[in-house]
Image 1: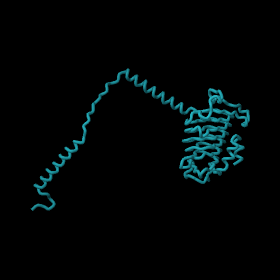
Image 2: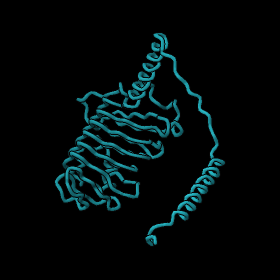
Image 3: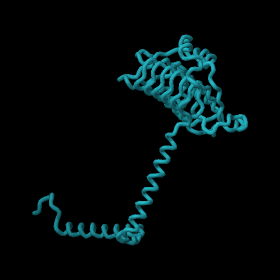
Image 4: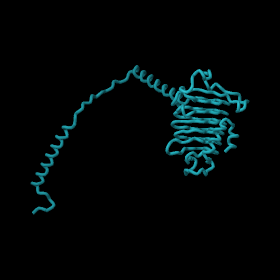
Length: 270
């Protein structure tokens, strides 16, 4: 008598045949859905000295193009301006005949011996939806209106300047001192900025911006904006650390009315 847990040899053979038959049927059915695709095997010929030279030339041209693009992107729109009032407008809002006949606006400057009240007024037109990069401005007032639709604004190495800025995407401010920044931007990031007023309305739903290595900032708190201070472990929304403090939105009007004043005079109004 066989053990109850052992399959009889006849049944085992029968079951094996049935399984084999099912496997064959499965393979046959599956093959009908597999469309054979022929792949042509290509063995590349060894490169001659001429082809190697051509490839090297193409790579050099591509690298040169990339460098040129990077230089063009990093080139400041305006730099090294002193004692000026710079008003940027779109081509649609001003005729070219009313613009100053200057080939390069960065060449315009006023002697440092003149007072800030005698700033030279410069109106310049730009194409709409263009990035703006301002570097090394001193004792200047800059107005970038909403109508210009500036895609991004970068402000770098500026001192004792007042900015009215409006960016559709982001604004990046770095290495500035004794400046006032008013306006609006989708996003804002501030690095290495000392003793400045930040009154930039954040247009994104997050309603917060980042500061890093900053000190002595006065932040106009529009819509309960939150400041993320990367020098601190915790994020503070009450302005209790030494790097910045909040003031009420009502001060914006006062700053706009006196935007041409020196920073030291403006700071007394807060």
